[in-house]
Image (tube, rainbow, N blue to C red; front, side):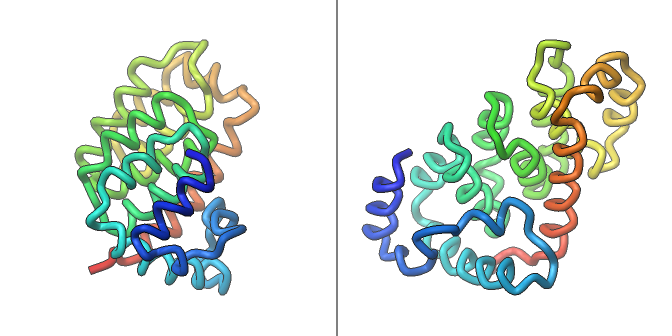
Length: 190
């Protein structure tokens, strides 16, 4: 989705002033607990999420966008609202690849843990050596955070060993862990 389209939609919803026009996504790539920049943006996103409650198609458009920036914006809103109705959209975006795969996997797991296991399980269960390692290992991370026996089963597989050697393995796990730790401390917006 083009940045101008997002800007226009936010203006139409009278939400344009809630987010800075540039750099709004950077702290969300690796938020830190107690970081003033993360805290400021989180407060802006809380207002933004409330304003988007009645714009489900826009939230879906953000999540399903191929560009990672709108996806990151959409999944942040979904986490803050704990809006389970977007879990399938996030799972679709994750399964189809996205640069913010670790963040997507965490969001899917946080919104509804039981359904989250089912959604990311499909990615791990259908993975092959040719699968996108970042996507598969991000899905595995979510299963691991949820203490699913499926994570332990996957760890024992030859495919896990193969994907562990991929360039994105460490980054995917590190980023997913950072997001999990951050978002687990954040209360949803009422």
